[in-house]
Image 1 (spheres, rainbow, N blue to C red):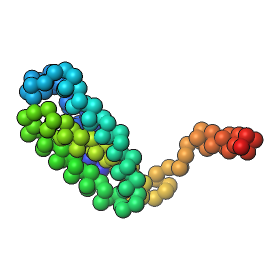
Image 2: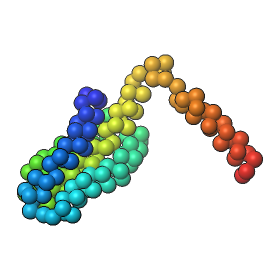
Image 3: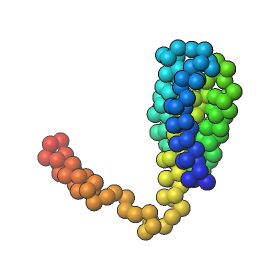
Image 4: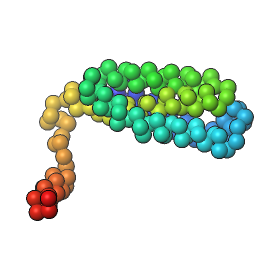
Length: 141
């Protein structure tokens, strides 16, 4: 289910790009208007992904993932049935919440698997960088 949810988001993210011209004609708008179809999705995804990821940490990743997939499904239905630009943009805004599927899926996998199968918390380079930053903070408060 985790891989299907991640693939669903990737599909929703990229499927609109080739059809922008057809969408523009379908909803009777300009090129500027149809660009909001992409902008709304990317903006809501950028804003909601960290918020919903944090919510998943607080109330449960599985519950939040189900809610995110529900938003993604409702948004897809709204966008598919849209007859005008505002309705299409609202559908894409709801689909943007699906951006949280990736961090939630990774969090669920990390919670389910033993620590030995997941790997270290930080790669070696990041640990070394962290030590350097800590040393610099001691020297320059």
